[in-house]
Image 1: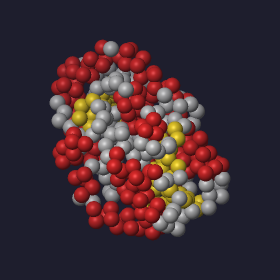
Image 2: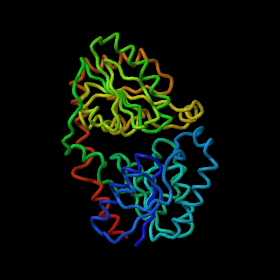
Image 3: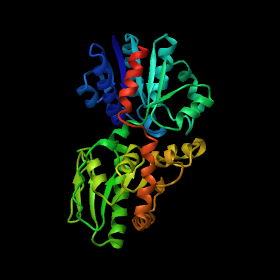
Image 4: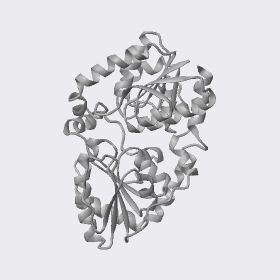
Amino acid sequence: MRIFISAGEPSGDLRASELVRSIRDIDSSIEFYGMGGPLMESSGVHLIKRIGESSVVGVQEALTHIPDLMRDFRDMYHHALLADAVILVDYPGYHLLLASRLLHARRRVFYYILPQLWAWGRFRISPLRKMEGLYSVLPFEPDFFRKLGVEVKYFGHPLASLYGRDIEGVERRGNPTIGLLPGSRKHEIRRLIPRMMRIKEHLERIYPDAFFYVSLLDESFRIPESENMRILRGKSLEIMKGSDVVIVASGTASLEAAILGTPAVVLYVMSESTWILARMFARVRWASLTNLILGREVFPEFIQHIRPEKVARTVARIMEKRDDVVREISRLKSLLGEGNPVDRVAEDLVSSL
């Protein structure tokens, strides 16, 4: 059996690679090919298309990449037609269009990490109704989709496996030790790093003995280290584990921090056009997964127009009630599932195939 699997950005590359490994543990004869990154390739996926600059988030960002996106889309569609089944992972703008075309061609389509229709765009539900398997990673999604007449399966969040891992945190070198995590996408880093450096300046006035760890994946971003700041690459979990508090880009990082028991302040900045549309159409009160799952703002959020001095004051307040925040985020464990949810998704997928 040949399966086409597609992920459009680094987080999807990770989740897809985990799923591929779990499926191949059940049936090693299944062949995988498709679109993804180095983690999928290392798990045994033959990459037809490598993700890179065409992996974009946001309206303005997508408009600047339309020619590349359309060319890639046509190529991926024709390759996917040759598969026995298709697994799409996250990246909804691209994948819902691809799914619609493939379903029209009567192909078997499965979706892992579902489009966030509860946030905006319920009109996009049509292709989901026709897929063979829908796998959620958020505990509140099954009820949401059931009300729309769509059955989805929830076995837990893949990050639940972090509860069983022994992660050694970075050395606590300051009072306090603060982690700065601007995300993995280039446009995220470009927008957040300058803001985080200004927040750092305000925090230094509040905490003269503070020490900062900055997580950077992209080698193209160069920030000079100083006596109280060190740059680490590929060590985001270690930074979270060893910090008293972290300032993170909205996304997976806020949930990782919560699972590791570290309070966080969440930042998110997008293009102004995307921000205007988000305010018009978004149906959610919070941006971070931690707050969405817990149903209240446990991690303070600062979206778009960020005032560095206000963020710094909020970090100080978090430090004052740190024990209360840690106690609150411990509730996540019962909501995210037990063991390795990815194995259960793989078992269900293989059974369906």
